[in-house]
Image 1 (cartoon, one colour):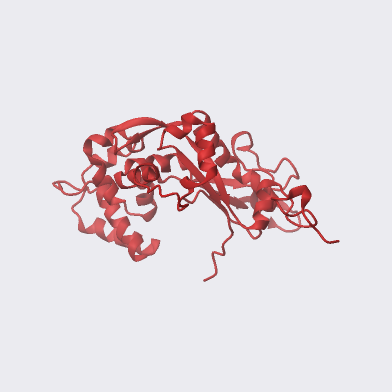
Image 2 (cartoon, one colour):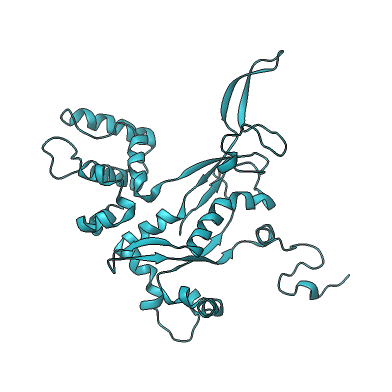
Length: 223
Length: 88
């Protein structure tokens, strides 16, 4: 990830839409007199260390607090893991948390955004805490019963094209692939060729993306 | 490879997965019909990027959920469809 920022270079920064919001953090220096690190690059380096070594969120927060104490006053380093993550959000790593009906009826978005109950069966959106069992009064609103994590694909694709290595790989099938009449890439398949014929405009641009959707369940508590 | 959605819960959504696919379908529609302006560093230019769903990878039960095909019973073969050879 850090390579990506370095590779992109200063001029390209302005052009790449993804980085529009990030520029403020990329220009703020880490602390007074620091020319080597900006706020963004410092967080990127630290996050890189965190992920490669599997540090926990808690330990990372503690480290940030310690670093904050070490640096001279007025430094711009965040003091929480959450804040550090938020800064990286603008790099196209944003995610949306969408509340969902526990019976899989609807997602609470768009016209259902503000609803408290599912319009189909009237089941509640939030966990309910009953304070008084006898009166059955619902006193407090809990957290959402079911939450889906949606990671928007458009900013991710933009990020891929902003990194020279990935951008090159994305057009590999058109530029460097060997055409030896053997099927060793989806681009050799009939389906691919048919689509190119059917939609010539789409087929002409080798940078157009073809998606592959895979689904499966996993057990987060296993292994 | 990109992770696009994580649905937590005790049970898998089964046929109701279409509800969860809504946001993705919207994004795919946008990418197919209008396209998105993307800056390409290698060529140093912006271009309209389009995208399409090329194929899906899933096991057989999930295939039924996705496409609405019948995956059990007499006519379960998605290729032979009506002409599935069966012994009854």
